Figure 1 (cartoon, rainbow, N blue to C red):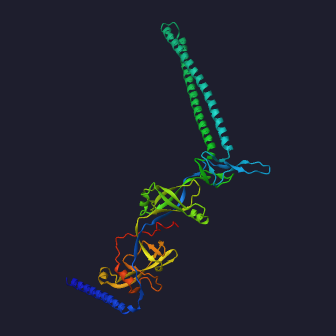
Figure 2 (cartoon, rainbow, N blue to C red):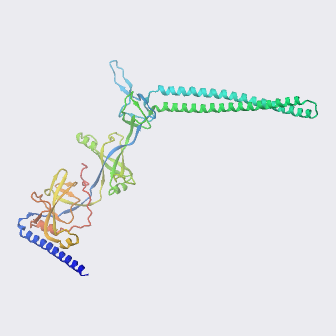
Length: 490
């Protein structure tokens, strides 16, 4: 017990010493800062002005065809030719004009049922002829086997008649033998005749069964030949590809004479009269699309915008689309929800692979308005300085360290903040995200102040007003920075 008390006393002594050191260090540091306050940088302070605005949420994706099919042959072979389309021919030297057939190429439109590509037909036609000949031979074998069955059946019937006659004669012989009208030798001769006729009946039956077996075999051969003929005709049909629906040829990788197998994509057909913009949306924003399912939204197509900037007479790069699908579950790898926006493309301005931006009005929120002088823009980011009141000094020693920390509330430090996205309103920057607990913003971008540096505040009316209004409501919800609603979509 005495040993435990000694250990506890030593521990309490150490705690007291460490606590005294921490307090002394904090007080000494505070005294040092007060003594050297005249060396601190002096910065003005302005209150953060908050204005309500309604921004926009932007989501980027790529345009895809509404339907797409990779066309392959079910059989291997050599490409013999492609389908054709009519191409107008201008008047030649003789004044002749008209149309000529040219092979289908990429970007050609084809109607449903149009022949697209053929394999060499000779071996498929030969297979049909061979299967047809085997079928005819099988049917001839069936006819021959049927005739044999009928013949053997007649032989069985005749043998049965002979056996029946022999049985009658044998019964009469038995009666005559009992009366000793005939001799035993004559009786045995009749018995042997009856046995011979029964043997002939059994032989006729065996031959009949053999004929029936040959008939069944011929019928099986006919079935095999019929299946071979069907397969040959199917292979001939599979040696030609037809368009399943109206579409445009997106790819034709092989030329005439190339050997292809069922693994090779011979043609890629797309339907682009209507296209869809496919987006990956995080779960925090999926509600925006769920509420707009079936409604129209603005879609900004970068390629069309670039064309409109080059040619003022070109249509705008902003089109309207309908939210057609919102995935009920996120992708297990990306954790994003798939959203599809269907777009009309009857004028064929949109091409699969183009990058587009879906723009949705965001929820109203408060924006921080900063003067342009307080902000430096570099590499697509904004840098500005906020002023924070107070900071902690002490040793981070867990619970013990917390007891030793001091809060120096009369000291001001600057915090440098980089912002990726913002909106601009004339000579002001509008932000919707900033550090919490700041007293205000430095209205002129300082060039000789480091992040976290202790500063002095310039005593002017603007600074005093900022200090008086420095309470920040922690319940304000600040989201991502978005462009203003009345700004052009650029």
